Length: 253
Image (cartoon, rainbow, N blue to C red; front, side, top):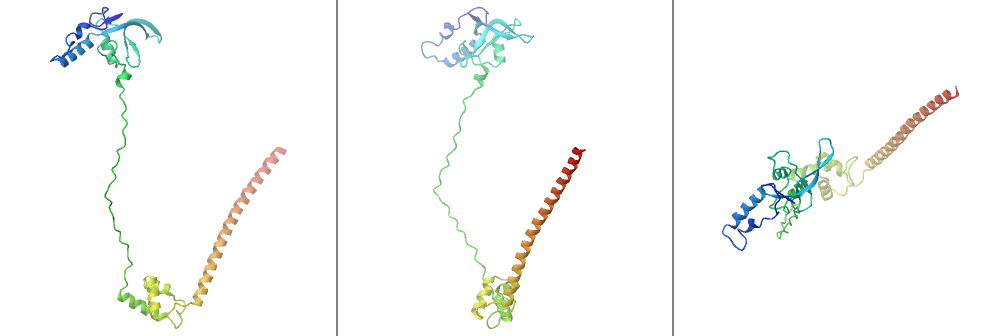
């Protein structure tokens, strides 16, 4: 049984007359006729008449009979119960998100009407560049020694160099630090004009003694750290023993 929204009487879900205008071939106004027919079909629709459940005011369900729409995709249904004479089922269904077609088998529920196919965006492939940019990185060259710097280094070495080497406590490194120049410059000038750097027994002994002192100091610091840790542990043990004694005395009493 079907319900017609225009007359409220039973009618067929299909109207052969509605398609007679464009049936049988090409028509110059075919698109306008189809759009007009679709609009009229939506305004004057037929619906299935079935029994359906509806919530009542007491929180329960009641069985009613009236126009029903059915989704052509998922099969979901919704019924309409007229509360006022002017209420129309198509207005009710549209208000609840239904997309009404031109017939009873062309309707869509809100979920199916709003579902759009998800387009998976494929990552754009970056075209490999055929042009390779070659960047020439110039290595930083050490600056060249000036004439004034060479004279100063030469004079400084002459002041502290003996026949077989430097006088204590001078060395190539000490000369470089005093003149604030690279060590390589001092070594080059000394080899060219004076001879081998030689050894400085007093300075070598001082350096060895200083290293021994540093090593001994580091060992003492490590031992001191262990002693401090043992002292803390001892205090904690003593506090624990005192607490146990107090608790034991309380139990004995």
